[in-house]
Length: 183
Ligand SMILES: CC(C)(COP(=O)(O)OP(=O)(O)OC[C@H]1O[C@@H](n2cnc3c(N)ncnc32)[C@H](O)[C@@H]1OP(=O)(O)O)[C@@H](O)C(=O)NCCC(=O)NCCS
Image: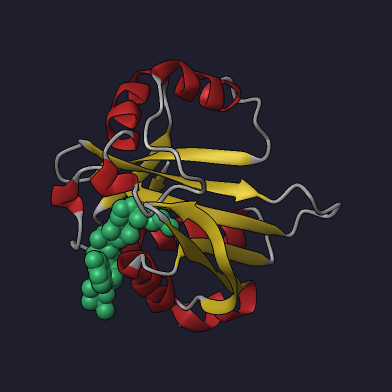
């Protein structure tokens, strides 16, 4: 369990899939948070996606539930996904979404990101954190930049949804840069 002042990141359990199903079918939450244009996801698709994770057999991804510390209620989900296309595993993507809108803009995203970065750099000894988002996701970009991520590149018009193409922004942070941010 990764514990902060406002939130706790705990393991995903099978009973959390009900909340995941609600959050991942909520367009307000997911419109700019999906890696691909998919406006609905079934419970079976979610069960299939997370089955290996639930069994502890997914060595490449850690999925977490974000719990509000003061109430113990789950408010969202987060992940660390190690990039497996490299022979030496040095980088991982960060993903997070607060599925309960009342939890937005209270610093939960900031603390969740810090806990994920601590885990990546101080426990897993990774060298590089990556953050992919759509160019119009202001909240995501603001959070990434606040944490010290720097824009590494832009995939122009990479994804099509809502009748137009959207740019993807790729941001990165190296372990040394995180040390610098923290001090
Ligand atoms: C992105 C998200 C996780 C941010 O979490 P959050 O808890 O609201 O963020 P925080 O309260 O920690 O705020 C972090 C910074 O971002 C800013 N911010 C938050 N929401 C913002 C918004 N909608 N527009 C502009 N800036 C915003 C805050 O002001 C803060 O900056 P500051 O400290 O300089 O004032 C949350 O909006 C969310 O879950 N969105 C839906 C899913 C999503 O898009 N996930 C990201 C996928 S890449």
